[in-house]
Image 1 (cartoon, protein in one colour):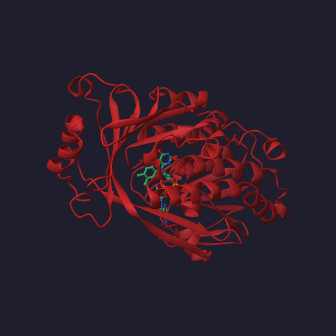
Image 2: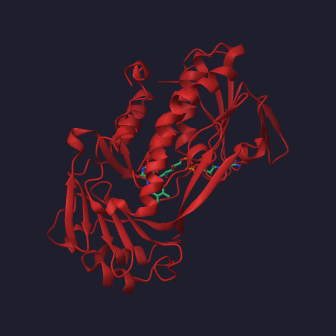
Length: 379
Ligand SMILES: Cc1cc2nc3c(=O)[nH]c(=O)nc-3n(C[C@H](O)[C@H](O)[C@H](O)COP(=O)(O)OP(=O)(O)OC[C@H]3O[C@@H](n4cnc5c(N)ncnc54)[C@H](O)[C@@H]3O)c2cc1C
């Protein structure tokens, strides 16, 4: 994929250079659009630690030509293991369904390089303050830019969504998480299945959880979960005595987390927006459907919907782009709604702690192939 693609005379302005914005940008530019992405941050970088991707987003990485870059420093752990009060209750391998773990900076870099290679222009320190469904974005600098397509990929606090006035419901779950990227510390951890993803649950006498996700041979993502109203469990920097007393087997990696720079506790957030497009403006990713991380599909659905948006917008004759966007989200939304709802239910009832929760129903989104042109005919 390269910038030598024939240009089709259409232009897109995208707010946000996260996973959703970069995927949409690359896919549009590869289809002939000129694309400009605005990122309000001063630098192009992904906050956060690690990520689990499944077949749906892996297919997108292949389709946009980011596959080799993303796969280069990532892994498929042997099992997704669930442990409760120190006892293994399940080890799932998803029956051969492709899945992959990696660091967020690594995925971001793979998407960024792919977008730049496709000819996307990216402006940092460029905040979008509002958008207009007729195809305009206004920047904090005072500049107003016109486009055939405006994409709000600006996350859970989306300015595109809020300035246009999409109706929405937003709520926070009772739990949240502090995420770290630390060295694997395999030797210090001692013998064990340390290549597995391991979801450690402590339910009695209090809820505390560690999601252990190896990303490659060197880097480990750990997410420390605690209720929002647990002052000690949600404290940053973490209370090392508390965490090592509950999860003594993880002491070496918890010690590394305790000295991490600038840790932040995030409450899980769900956002349900009435429509995903209005006029020439469309929403993708957390701007449209932020979800709890139980089924690890926030970024997966962000990339999936960003990709299908680019395909749908390109296929529309220019006069029909508004209808094409409406058709796009009516077609693509139901599967995202379902995984979002299931993820919110799991956050509310902590049901992932039962183990063996990745059944056919819960893997529906993971198995989806947004690049299969017959996907809706066969659904
Ligand atoms: C604890 C936790 C674990 C998770 N684990 C997984 C997982 O394993 N797998 C998975 O698929 N998902 C996971 N998710 C979800 C995933 O992180 C998000 O769904 C995904 O990052 C959303 O991407 P995005 O591009 O839509 O938004 P963001 O990543 O929020 O990116 C938005 C970008 O827009 C920029 N921006 C914001 N406002 C403006 C503006 N006004 N103008 C210009 N730029 C702006 C921001 O700076 C940012 O760069 C997890 C989430 C959490 C909280």
